[in-house]
Amino acid sequence: MTEENRETAAAEFDTAADELECAVQHLHVAAGHFRAGEIARACAHAFAAEGHMIEARRLVEHRALVHRTKSQV
Image 1 (cartoon, helix red, strand yellow):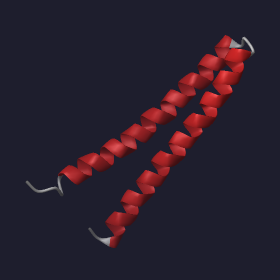
Image 2 (tube, one colour):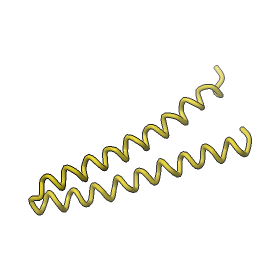
Image 3 (cartoon, helix red, strand yellow):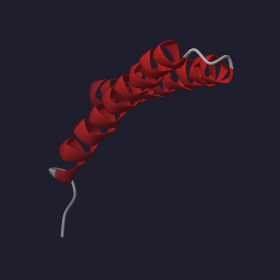
């Protein structure tokens, strides 16, 4: 793996981690809104969290697809 390839992989994992951190923040906000009875706002943040988790998963899946071409059996 070249240095450029390693940096690309690292950057994608950093981005995935950032997406998950955003998801955590939205989930905390959603919890607060649920406690306050603000259901629509809570759901909006819950869906935003899900979007961030989907993007993080997409990035990790991409790395897995790249890795499958490098692995030997």
